[in-house]
Length: 346
Image 1 (cartoon, rainbow, N blue to C red):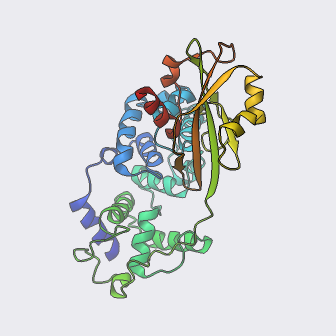
Image 2 (cartoon, rainbow, N blue to C red):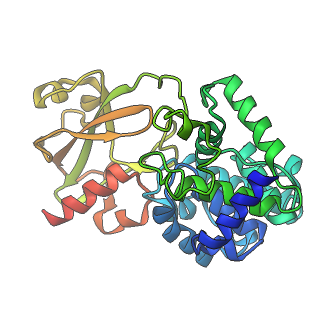
Image 3 (tube, rainbow, N blue to C red):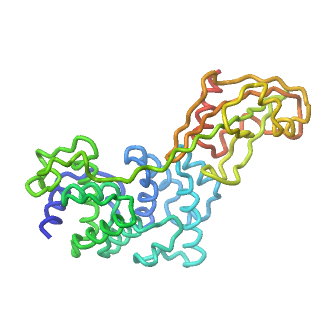
């Protein structure tokens, strides 16, 4: 209990003024937690305001189209979060008759909600003593208790969850959870934590053993996959183009220019000879120009995408009839959005 009391005292004196900390509305807490998965607070803040303004209730979100939700999410990455958010909003309205789940066991049934998010909502909104374990919590616990079990191993996930559950303040579970997460974000930071002013420094195992930089332990990352994308940016004589909706993968249901993916980087001649290129243009007269002289490397968590944007000038065709003026209405990946910004400049 002393550990929790020290954290809560520090939190009440040092917490950041964040908009989702002024409410216990489960819809808004859920929204903030989904946005902040894999996202820094300073980046996620503007999206939280955009979403709560456009969709003030779960019903408003449920009634939106997926394209509207994805467009508003554009630039935040990990788009499955947005798709799951929208799916769960419709589930709440249609299957739960608009009643937001009120405990951990019901919350975790929502698509895109795992142990961490369910614990956060249940403790903050409903005072249920369910401990959160995120990257910040792993770091605080690993250092304070000197735990060397890898945090991304099956054993580690179970061990840290059990420990966090033992430590939670049952009278103030929501405050406790927010305190330990804030402590990890502000005080016990990944690099250069401020150990000299830390209120836990007299009992921190990692500090006493000079293991701050070694903890927490993480098992080796999975191998990064390299992919090679060739986007065909079509421009017809009447200034039309086309976009394609992705049917699978990381950018599911986002729009992009026709794509030819290859096993390695290719040049103009190899592109023209590619079967998919020929199928698309059916021996039409085309002229090609590489937009980016240097290959663009778009880095994601498990893959690096090496991208070339090819400007394809061709004849008027019913296959390509999208007006350039309407492209901004479509939800696209950051990779495509960055290209469109640069393309306008040229």
